[in-house]
Image (cartoon, rainbow over all chains, first blue to last red; front, top):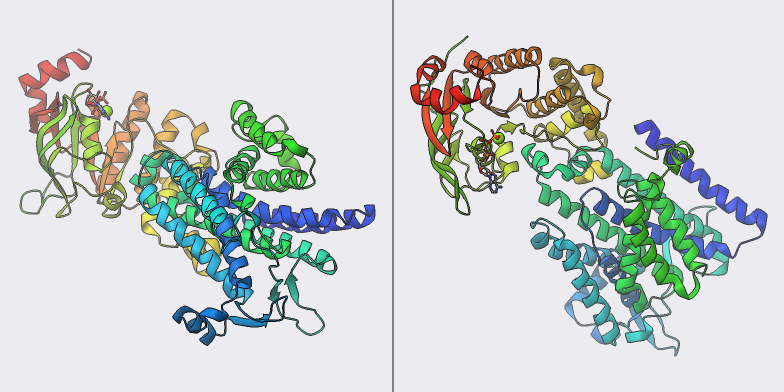
Length: 359
Length: 265
Ligand SMILES: Nc1ncnc2c1ncn2[C@@H]1O[C@H](COP(=O)(O)OP(=O)(O)OP(=O)(O)O)[C@@H](O)[C@H]1O
Ligand SMILES: [Mg+2]
């Protein structure tokens, strides 16, 4: 199983390089931007996939976690803290060296949080919110999480639309680049930004993070805790085996929120901004549809469908019917292929193509 | 058959005190008290619907009691969660076998090892080397148990595709993997032929000899009479009798209510 996992991860790395070469060979560099974005959305989808597939819980609020990540990162790295310089939290951040100074477009002094610190704070905030929702709700049996997260998603969306701090309907723009790694020797710095000259680098960073993301999830699923997760379907037997099913579900829920928030942070830096559309419930439904179409307990299927369909959507293939398409996909999957599209007759064929596709 | 030699002076492993369970108007368990001595095999018998499985669900914490007390290893466990009770050393099988979908026989048994291992969430996520040794130990012990139940050759077969008797064996191995002090078996021989039933009887006796106390529900009278140290008879949620097998066999009331109508003449 471990060999299979490593082989399939290696195959995914090769596929990433292959994708790049294909783009170069066909002169379609303009696809790189959408492929980069699709990888970040893929991160949301695989995290949600573990929650839905193994913990058997549906979240209709993952766009909310994505937005908490994206908006907090955007706000912390753009909003001027100069007027609050004397406030305790700001002084603490300053002491820790987590503040950056600069100039705004009018040349006035600008004091902001560094992207790394903002990233950590944003993801932490999402994790804490997930914990606050999950602790009371996951104790209950059934799909209460779907209801609670639906409410949560709506609240986040409305707050973002209403608050001037978060830019109301315009969202936040001019989000700076995220220097992920400093320059080392001959190698330049690794920076997340949408600049044309960082395009290829960002493609690899996004796909690298996606591959890391799926590698961690595969680790988890193959571990003791992962076995506990996979046993949750038979809750009585799991409990009788000493598994705290509520706690297991909570852990996965928080993890999936962390994945969504991380994707939100990184994509916001890549796009240089974020708007309230990212927090809409329709986005959450889309993530659920992507997990469903990929096959609930099939991480690879989820990954492929999540990235593939998101790419098509970003390319505008579905035109004005974008949301309709994802709604229709959700209905069609539930009716015709509850195990995901890859569970249809293509299943055997597809498994042969994807090593470890069934792990 | 080694009897219950230390049943009297030692505190019982499990004790029920006036346990009640009501489902709306139905009094499924009506004031049951009994004790299970450490190292013994105790059987609960009674006609269909007598409340045997409900009683197991109360003991294992799958259902809350309506009133009464249950002590296990000197602790009151009514009101505790199932997984907490399991951690105290109680394992069980189910009347309608419950295995884990999409898992091989080996993996099912490895799940049973949960309480005997500790690798946490982050250790799993980052596949820390510290977990590798434990993972190997879990696998080895699970394999041993499959071997003990004579289904080692089926280790890598998906559990839900196994024959009925084999699934029961997997479930038993899953329960044993927890190294429990008390093992609850709900109709371990249901649906098995006479050879398999005899095999199960021998197995249960072996398990007891390994130091695991067994409480079982079973309809097969030959099995119950053969291996039990003591028998509790339930009917409509109340305790009719509690005695050694030889006396139960002679008890007129028990014969009329249960043995007479359910067993072959
Ligand atoms: N969750 C429940 N809700 C309502 N009634 C229940 C529930 N579980 C069991 N009962 C009822 O309680 C009574 C006892 O059921 P139980 O399953 O404990 O019987 P049993 O002795 O195990 O029978 P069998 O030999 O058929 O397994 C039955 O009348 C049953 O219908
Ligand atoms: Mg029963």
